[in-house]
Image (cartoon, rainbow, N blue to C red; front, side, top):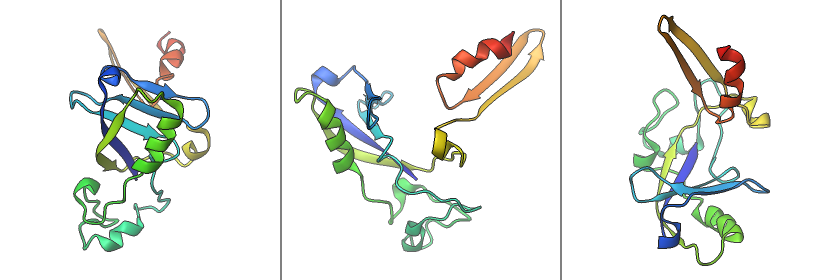
Amino acid sequence: MCEIILCSVSENLKNVGITVMDGPFFSIMPFGKTGYHSLTSVTFTPHTTSYDSLPTFECQERSNGFCTKESLGNCNDCPAKPKTAWSYMSNLAKKYLKDEYEFKYEKSLFSMKPILKASEIDDSRPTVIKQFSSNPTFISVLSGKINTVFDLDEVLK
């Protein structure tokens, strides 16, 4: 279960996205056309993990049937949704940003993020490449990592 924090930002950060990849990774980026920026971090975006066959989380017991392992509810509407990690994520970002870059909490979005067990160790993401036709050539690439573009040359030859 993961949290994306939506923030309003100062004018000098409006059209800017920043990702720090040295040390504790975090990112503050424009979030589509919402007018908000998303704030995420490798350490604090994930709240809890389930390794069970069906997703099992402690908050389900407090949801009054809103969410079960057989039928996940929308975490954003759940009466037992997790508390925000705003204080942790904002403090992390403030360590790396100058004081002139201001951002403030607006709301949180919670969602389930399915990943492979192996990805917990090496941060890998599966890539699915499927050719649908050859005349004309139509190939679909579905991947969770941007570095897939470097692997495509080999596949597309």
